Length: 168
Image 1: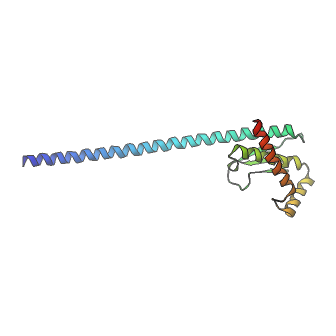
Image 2: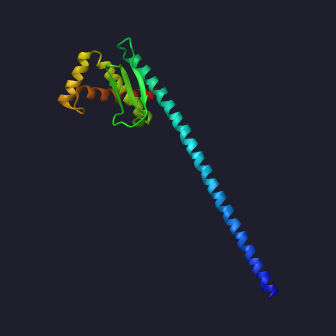
Image 3: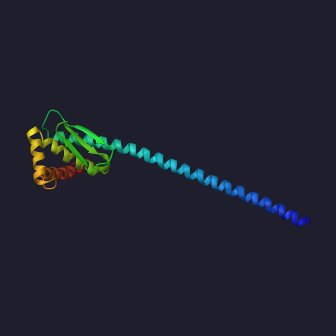
């Protein structure tokens, strides 16, 4: 009977020790997982911040390069990099003299250089209200894919992107 009491006491202590071991295992597992998730979140946040910086820096450099290669007007276009969803990679607005680049659709260096070169050529070609009207009329007539100016801007965007990336 004395032996069975000792054995029962040892079993209870053993259960308490197992319970405490399990508690600390789960505690450190959860705390460790939260710590790792926090590190991942902060890393992604930091990388996204750098991504925005490299996009703006690259876009400004490509715009400067295009202006040197193909100067046409005294007033250079405004550059606007936009966050958020769009089906477009970029667009040029004649009335505001603005090139808009959609960040989420230009996450690769080549894509950003190509898009900016493409939109720069819209700026280069549409230098009057009559040419802007002609662009819109041809868009209705030919559609986007067969639009004469889009064909030219796509070709120039591809060619200039290759040239820029070879030299930079």
